[in-house]
Length: 145
Image 1: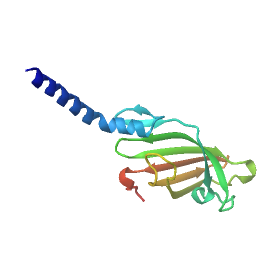
Image 2: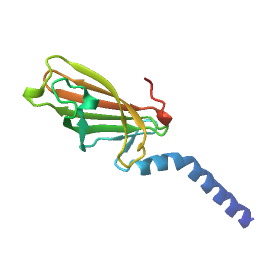
Image 3: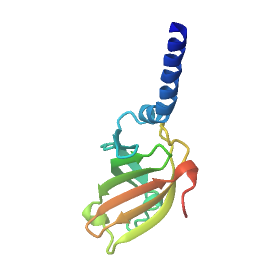
Image 4: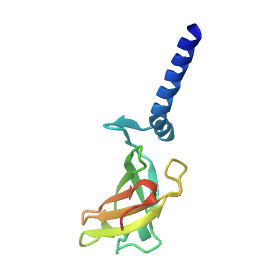
C-alpha cells in the first residue's frame, strides 16, 4: 500500500512539474521580467542601444548615422510574441521639420530568447526630436508585413 502511495505521489509531482514547465522556462529565459496577466513577462529596462539611421529613416541624418536609444520596455509572452520599445531624443539641429514614420525590420543579435528572430519595427520621430522605436515579433517569426 505504501508503494502505491509513493508511486502516486511521484506521478502527481511529475505531472505538476510538466504543467508548470513552460512558465518556468519563460521565466528563466527573461530573468529580469515580471509576469503580468495571463503569462506575459514585462521587463522595464534602461539599456541603451545604438540604432542606425537605416532603421530610423530620419531625413536630417546621414544614412550611416547612429542614434543612442534607451529600451524602456520589453514584453514577451509564453507563445513567443514580444515587443520592445526604445525612446530617445535628437539634438535641435538634427530634428526633422515634419513627423517621420519609418517601417523597417531588425534581426535580433543580442543573446536571449529572441536571438536570430526578425522584428517588424516602426520608428516615429516627432518635430520636437523625440524618437519612439517599437519592434514587434510574432510567434515563430510570423510577423505581418
